[in-house]
Length: 403
Ligand code: ADP
Ligand code: ASP
Ligand code: MG
Image (cartoon, rainbow, N blue to C red; front, side, top):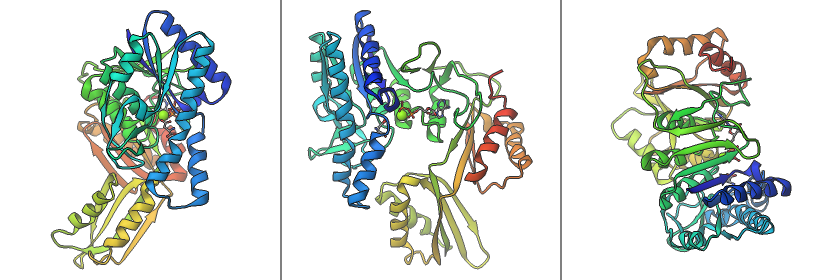
């Protein structure tokens, strides 16, 4: 088998853990597999590098940001390759550039364009184990880019697709995907198998166990994904095609605290205003989540939307540039919100489930600030301070806890 194995930051956070990962990779190799390893930066290295950069410049040039943050992965690939050579294996560390990973030039949130597989395949043909830096690539102008926080999963899936690998295994600090984030809900149910679509909704709305773009890519190219604990054997979660069930069922709950709300107060109520606002956000390459327009009687509207907290500063800059043109009275933001979502195929078609969600939140005496939905998800924005009790109550209500 040709297997891509991705190890996340917590799985390689100490020299001991790197040695243990090296052991695991060696074992899979000795069983007769061809292995390509993708690795993240050790522990909280990426956070440390970002803090370091912000100490010298709060608003760094994006090219220099990528140059700094990509170094974390460069350390872990060389450490892991060195640990493997101690075990008698011929491992070769490769940066994104060396591995042939091309991206566009959107620094800090670059999109993958192509993985040239020649270099990786020739190493595999020689019986070697490529150890590739996750999260990074190279732009058309030859500059180092990064894919956005958590992006190593996406590197792994892209490589698995490029090599036509049999499976892409994601090793992390949990033994699979749970029906709720274990940090918010005590004793959630373990999920053995989940569809790409449900996993995409989970990843898009806070379950950071997998990077959203990794699951989207896996679905598009039908790459089978498996999530396992890096150091403890046992359970796993398979993400792939799952037979459709007739009955809508809440499969999982997600929490996202990494968002902020931005409000343009009392903009003009006439054709073209929303287009102007969102064109500006498109120019800044800012992804949106919820959008709500509320009407006033005086020919003015409030436009509110949510963005990732990491994009808040850029969003405020963008809105301040457009504020006068759309005659907004003010631009506000609120970063003390959180989003709780329930996920399951076709749940929007089930009025009992929708009622169950709103009723549970009301029973906790919590106000809902914004609501959005898709066919297989309903999300509510509430105050961040209430998120723990609401997540727990919803997990009870929809039987998302282990028996
Ligand atoms: P890595 O460093 O390996 O990429 P991450 O921290 O990105 O690991 O992802 C693993 C974390 O995702 C877990 O520690 C867990 O807290 C979190 N997580 C969020 N939602 C879920 C979920 N539904 N099931 C499992 N883990 C989840
Ligand atoms: N090291 C990067 C981050 O912390 C990429 C990753 O871990 O997937 O976001
Ligand atoms: Mg991750």
